[in-house]
Length: 346
Image 1: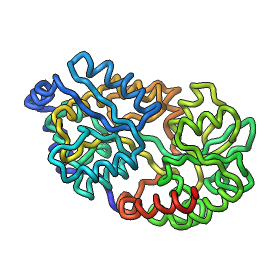
Image 2 (image 1 turned 180 degrees about the vertical axis):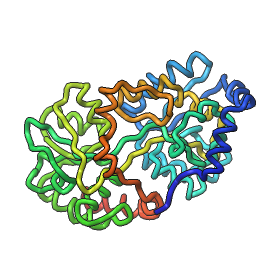
Image 3 (image 1 turned 60 degrees about the vertical axis):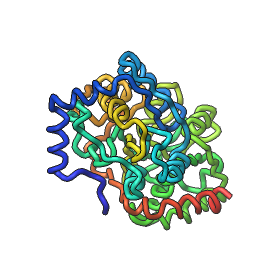
Image 4 (image 1 turned 180 degrees about the horizontal axis):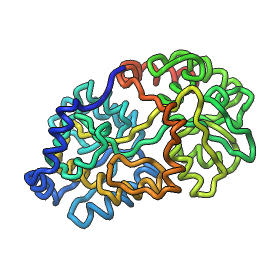
């Protein structure tokens, strides 16, 4: 399996550099900046503004401009702009799998950890050569306990018996295909068995929603009663009064890591590093856990025990956590997206 991690030597060097006095100067020099951030819209963009931008950047003269779109069109845009001396964004919000894909395509600049003083607090596994993990959770089965019994597996979640009460999220095609594959004998390195499962669900009437927010609205109105989603989102929806619970599927619980990377031709790399440092602020990480239900990626964030119980994983569930094969996803993403759009959604 391909890993997207720093070597031990690189991690130690990055952490040491991040604590150096010189790194403080690197941040200070980029204070008066306009930083263009490519990111998803909806809740994620709103919470970046609330928990990172407003408290840690605006007062320092940093203007964050939001270029909102799904990750697929943003990655296509990065590829289209690759030959330009200057791209149109300074930083991109992507999943770890997508960051790996962009790194392999030669589209990312290495992270200069010497310009990020707070990087010394990062969980080592979230320190990548070409990106930084911001938040993480894992894919679980979700359901309305008033309307359906708790699923024990992804196989239960995709059971055609649910008909049109089953929801599927379009923008999460990679993870939906992975979960379906795991339910049918596949693995993180073989998504093909998932196609049969998804076509059966579609034939039974499964509803496809364009975004996470649309899926949540359908759960709230009880148009649907089940599907799959990040555990973190379940917490967020519970906070919003939606009747929803989560269950760890027996086939395995795939990690989800969302983070930030810098395009190789970003016009303002220094400003991008300022943003990355603000993202690692203790308060920003703690408030994302509260507002969005995702686990933070820094060691100094403090999460209340009751919240940690809701967003984290029990010792038994931790044994089910599985990492992704980023190399497999990068190699097959274009074909997966083509199948998803032209066959599954057709």
